[in-house]
Amino acid sequence: MVQHESIPVKNEFFKNFNPENLAKLDSIVNRFDRRESLTDLQRAELNTEFCDCVSILNEVYFAYVYPDLSLKEVMRKYPDDLEEFQEFLNILSCLITNQDIPVDWPNSIDFEKADPTTIGCIEYHHKEKIERSKSTLCNLVLKLKEDFGWKKEPLNHIEMIILQKLKSLKDEKMTVSQILFYLDNEHKTSIDEKTARTYLKKLVPYGIQHKAKSGYYYMHTA
Image 1 (cartoon, one colour):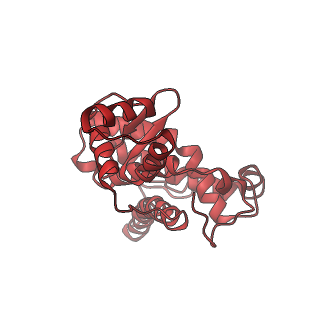
Image 2: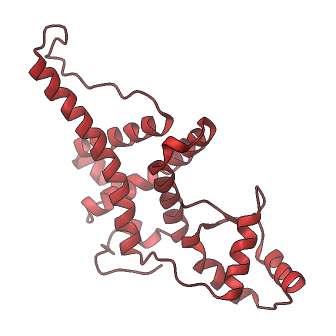
C-alpha cells in the first residue's frame, strides 16, 4: 500500500486498508454508474456487494471527516452525522435496486394542505439529497484512489498473460501454484512464486482479486 501525505496515518483504519478493498469499492462505483444497463440479477448482486461494504464505507468516510476519532467515537460524539451518512447509503441501495425513495416530509407539514411552493421546496431538497448521496460515494472512492496511489501501471508480457487467463475464467479461481504451472505448461515461461505474487499485486487495479484459501480471480471494474 502506498502511503500519501494527505492520509491521516494516526487513524488506524488507513493503516489496515488494502488494495483489495479499494478494488471492490471501485468495482461497485463503476457498476453503479451504469446501473441502468444492468439486469435485475446483476442489480441484486451489486446491492449485495454494496451492503457487504457498508462497514468499509463508514470507516472510510469518517476517517476522512474525523481523522482523529475512531468510528465508535464518531457514533458517540456525532450521531447526527452518522445518521445522515446511513441515509445516504440507504438511498444508494434504493438506486441500485431501482426502488422508489420516499420523500421525507416534515411532521409539521400537512401534504394535503401544503402550498405548491412548500411542496416544490421539499421535493427540491429531496432530489438534492439523492445527488449528494451519489456524489459522496463517487468522490469518496476517487479520494481513496488518489491517496493510495491507485493507478494502472503498464504491464509486461507475463503480467498480460496472467491477466488474460484470469479474465477468461468464469466462476473459477487460480492459486499461485496453478498460475505457475499454467505459465510453464502453456507458455514455456518460468518464474518463481515471489515474482508471481509481485505481478498479481500489480494486477489489482485491473480487477484481480484474491480470496483466502481459494485463489485469484477477476472482478469487473469497468
